[in-house]
Length: 132
Image 1 (cartoon, rainbow, N blue to C red):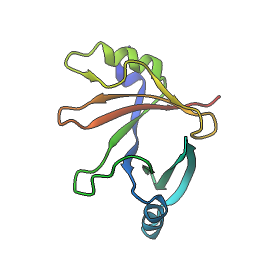
Image 2: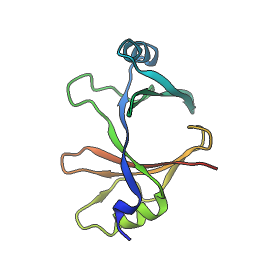
Image 3: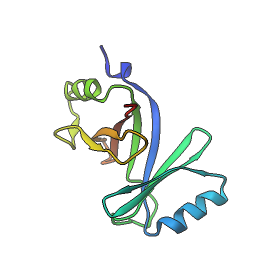
Image 4: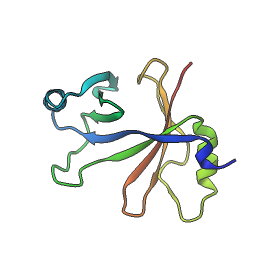
């Protein structure tokens, strides 16, 4: 099997927010809808959607406030365990997570994910929305 057997395309782009309410209001003006609003510990995280484009934005992390401030690009993963094993086999890939991470409060059943570092120090997340 190959990594592309478990990755179907982009899932979302992650942008930290210094004020989540202001950020949501801005993107709503552009036609985005709130697809999900979740708590992650004491902070909130929103998924804003316009067509097939989804932005994950959250409070609690430092905000760069300059061009290039995107935190990560997330790839939709159908089987995060198998994708994790395939990525670990690739030469020259820097794993940012030594194991698969999870956030049970996102979506109906939670998410599982891991991150790697791209060649320009961009973070690439492989994320599976759990269905049960």
